[in-house]
Image (cartoon, rainbow over all chains, first blue to last red):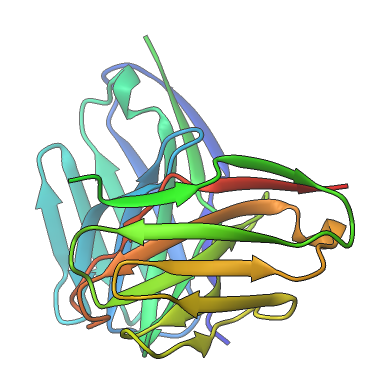
Length: 111
Length: 114
């Protein structure tokens, strides 16, 4: 059974710091991996989607990598800002219509 | 263009009461989904609708029913609410449910069952 784990559950960093969020999954048979952002009381917003054939995707200050063989993905945030404070969720698509989500990492960027 | 909308935003029920959560999307998407999010856990799929006229069970369907009313609307019904159904419910949609697509989420409905 596919399981997705995100460690740490919470992270606090000073503004301007570069940081890495981690995601691990137990079954390497995935079609893609996606990173979402969730603000308090809001729905999820897609940040980056990496297909299984890709190694990384970049959008602005965000860079996501995927290593299927080790069952790991990282989300790198450069020059963090208070506006980056949110919960970041990782999700894998094993097939069909199902998506398996991690519990998320709650990020707080201090001004 | 409102995206995915959900009503109500918040609801309190007593055990045994019933209610329907409404979801609508204006992106002409074929596939729609219902998830629940509980503290310390990832979102879990309750039901999905690959296209208008079809619905299928997800990971945690017990205690729920769904209706794909038309291409735009997908409702989730709790026939007899239980405290274990206290959660935040999210509706999502995607173009066709293909692997390269992303899902677009609504703002959620917070449900408290006493």
